[in-house]
Amino acid sequence: MVKIYCYSRCSTCKKALKWLDDNGVKYESLDIKEQHPDRKILKKLNEQSGLPLKKFFNTSGKLYREMELSKKLADMSEDEMLDLLASDGMLVKRPLLITDNAVLAGFKEEVWAETLL
Image (cartoon, rainbow, N blue to C red; front, side, top):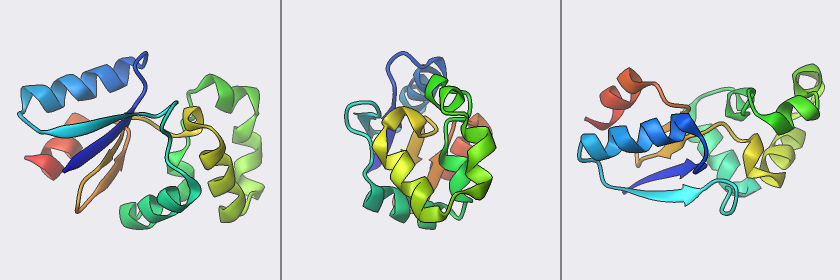
Protein backbone atom coordinates (compact mmCIF):
# COMPACT_ATOMS: atom_id res chain seq x y z
CA MET A 1 0.00 0.00 0.00
CA VAL A 2 1.22 3.48 -0.89
CA LYS A 3 1.25 6.10 1.87
CA ILE A 4 1.52 9.79 1.22
CA TYR A 5 2.10 12.56 3.73
CA CYS A 6 0.45 15.75 2.47
CA TYR A 7 -0.74 19.14 3.62
CA SER A 8 -4.25 20.06 2.45
CA ARG A 9 -3.34 23.66 1.58
CA CYS A 10 -0.24 22.73 -0.42
CA SER A 11 -0.72 23.10 -4.19
CA THR A 12 2.02 20.56 -4.96
CA CYS A 13 0.32 18.02 -2.69
CA LYS A 14 -2.97 18.62 -4.48
CA LYS A 15 -1.26 18.01 -7.84
CA ALA A 16 0.34 14.83 -6.50
CA LEU A 17 -2.96 13.46 -5.16
CA LYS A 18 -4.69 14.26 -8.46
CA TRP A 19 -1.88 12.48 -10.31
CA LEU A 20 -2.30 9.39 -8.11
CA ASP A 21 -6.07 9.41 -8.67
CA ASP A 22 -5.70 9.95 -12.44
CA ASN A 23 -3.29 7.02 -12.64
CA GLY A 24 -5.40 4.66 -10.52
CA VAL A 25 -2.86 4.39 -7.70
CA LYS A 26 -4.48 3.46 -4.40
CA TYR A 27 -3.02 5.24 -1.42
CA GLU A 28 -3.47 6.21 2.20
CA SER A 29 -3.23 9.95 2.71
CA LEU A 30 -1.84 11.27 6.00
CA ASP A 31 -1.97 14.91 7.09
CA ILE A 32 1.66 15.90 7.61
CA LYS A 33 0.68 18.61 10.07
CA GLU A 34 -1.52 16.41 12.27
CA GLN A 35 0.03 12.96 11.72
CA HIS A 36 3.64 13.81 10.93
CA PRO A 37 6.22 11.03 11.00
CA ASP A 38 8.11 10.60 14.26
CA ARG A 39 11.87 10.38 14.63
CA LYS A 40 12.00 6.59 14.26
CA ILE A 41 9.91 6.64 11.07
CA LEU A 42 11.92 9.53 9.62
CA LYS A 43 15.19 7.70 10.26
CA LYS A 44 13.85 4.58 8.56
CA LEU A 45 12.48 6.57 5.59
CA ASN A 46 15.76 8.41 5.21
CA GLU A 47 17.68 5.13 5.12
CA GLN A 48 15.25 3.62 2.59
CA SER A 49 15.37 6.68 0.34
CA GLY A 50 19.13 6.82 -0.02
CA LEU A 51 18.81 10.62 0.06
CA PRO A 52 20.80 12.96 2.28
CA LEU A 53 18.69 13.88 5.32
CA LYS A 54 18.77 17.54 4.25
CA LYS A 55 16.53 16.58 1.30
CA PHE A 56 13.74 15.84 3.79
CA PHE A 57 13.45 19.49 4.80
CA ASN A 58 10.74 21.71 3.31
CA THR A 59 13.12 24.47 2.28
CA SER A 60 10.35 26.66 0.88
CA GLY A 61 8.27 26.54 4.06
CA LYS A 62 7.57 29.47 6.33
CA LEU A 63 8.88 27.71 9.45
CA TYR A 64 12.13 26.73 7.70
CA ARG A 65 12.72 30.37 6.76
CA GLU A 66 11.72 31.72 10.17
CA MET A 67 14.17 29.36 11.88
CA GLU A 68 16.88 30.34 9.36
CA LEU A 69 17.66 26.67 8.84
CA SER A 70 19.49 27.30 5.57
CA LYS A 71 22.27 28.78 7.73
CA LYS A 72 22.13 26.07 10.42
CA LEU A 73 21.69 22.67 8.74
CA ALA A 74 25.30 22.37 7.58
CA ASP A 75 26.49 22.43 11.19
CA MET A 76 23.83 20.07 12.57
CA SER A 77 24.34 16.38 13.27
CA GLU A 78 22.01 13.78 11.80
CA ASP A 79 20.47 13.28 15.26
CA GLU A 80 19.78 17.01 15.57
CA MET A 81 18.20 17.09 12.10
CA LEU A 82 16.01 14.07 12.88
CA ASP A 83 14.86 15.66 16.14
CA LEU A 84 14.03 18.87 14.33
CA LEU A 85 12.14 17.14 11.51
CA ALA A 86 10.17 15.09 14.03
CA SER A 87 9.24 18.20 16.03
CA ASP A 88 6.95 19.69 13.36
CA GLY A 89 5.48 18.17 10.20
CA MET A 90 5.65 21.52 8.45
CA LEU A 91 9.44 21.16 8.33
CA VAL A 92 9.17 17.94 6.30
CA LYS A 93 9.28 18.15 2.51
CA ARG A 94 5.98 17.24 1.00
CA PRO A 95 4.44 15.34 -0.45
CA LEU A 96 6.32 12.44 1.08
CA LEU A 97 5.47 9.24 -0.79
CA ILE A 98 6.21 5.83 0.71
CA THR A 99 5.93 2.50 -1.09
CA ASP A 100 7.31 -0.94 -0.26
CA ASN A 101 10.33 -0.19 -2.45
CA ALA A 102 10.80 3.59 -2.47
CA VAL A 103 10.58 6.83 -0.53
CA LEU A 104 10.13 10.01 -2.57
CA ALA A 105 10.33 13.51 -1.09
CA GLY A 106 8.57 16.08 -3.26
CA PHE A 107 6.54 15.60 -6.42
CA LYS A 108 8.25 15.06 -9.75
CA GLU A 109 5.79 13.44 -12.13
CA GLU A 110 8.39 11.54 -14.16
CA VAL A 111 10.01 10.08 -11.03
CA TRP A 112 6.65 9.10 -9.59
CA ALA A 113 5.62 7.47 -12.90
CA GLU A 114 8.88 5.52 -13.02
CA THR A 115 8.38 4.38 -9.42
CA LEU A 116 4.65 3.63 -9.41
CA LEU A 117 3.56 2.70 -12.91
